[in-house]
Image 1 (spheres, rainbow, N blue to C red):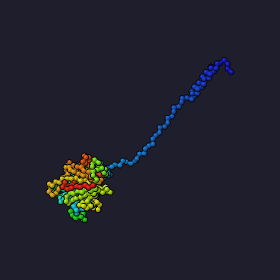
Image 2 (tube, helix red, strand yellow):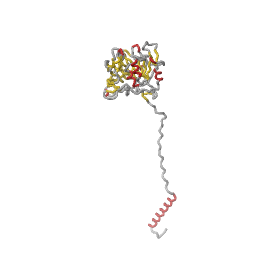
Image 3 (spheres, helix red, strand yellow):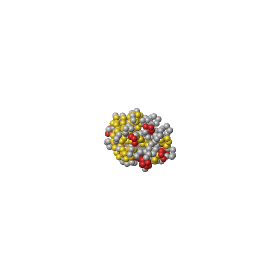
Image 4 (tube, rainbow, N blue to C red):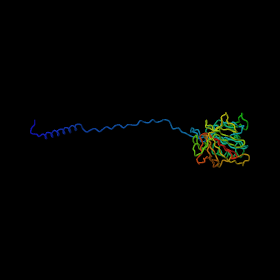
Length: 350
């Protein structure tokens, strides 16, 4: 036992010895390593589709969707006979637009327009009338007819359209159908007519299109309609009946179902009924006055809305405006335009 050392001094010596030992151990171990960072999680890569976006185009005279390349050809307007002996006509249900107009004797004829679905043949083809340049000029493209009075032919030749005329054609575009009686037997090879003039520009849009039920907005005050009864004259009173099953208007003439060649009922998605003045400057040949404005009804999806039509010039399209000032839109599909003289009548039945 060591003597002569105080207890407090012994405790201090022990503390100093422990501190020295701790420093020596730290010197042997070296500096503390830096902490290793945790890896950053990476998001799973999203799958990338390999298909290209699908281009969508609209038929300018029907408002229906179509392949972008499909409309890249001119429209074909044809003067179509509506004499009783000319019925049934060919391919009326494949038209984009049909204009029905009053001609001499109180009967009617059509300016039928094909673009989105051009058939092989159409007809019977008849002669031109003085209002036809005002109808077809906004469309451009091709007009086909059998002939007509010299002054009326000159009026049509003065338009920018390509004129194809039976009386002058020696290229085989027209032929006479053996099963039909003349003069209601002239048939046009329509698809060939378009193919020969394929470089002409496609038609511009003529009407505004909406949904399949474009008159549903309460602001249009469209009335439910089951039947449209039209009187052009004592000789012509076509009518249209709404068929909900097919979502089309079915056509009759003089109280009988109207059919095209092959027996299918003539039908339309839209019926546009315009009240028009008649210019009698050409004697017994009436001229529908289309440059101007007037009353109109648009019938679509079993409804009818009232408004006004306006056409500013021969080259201008017809503009349809509802009574509330908004555009009168059509449902996508084919359209018949009834150019009813003010001396006639129109009745809508709900």
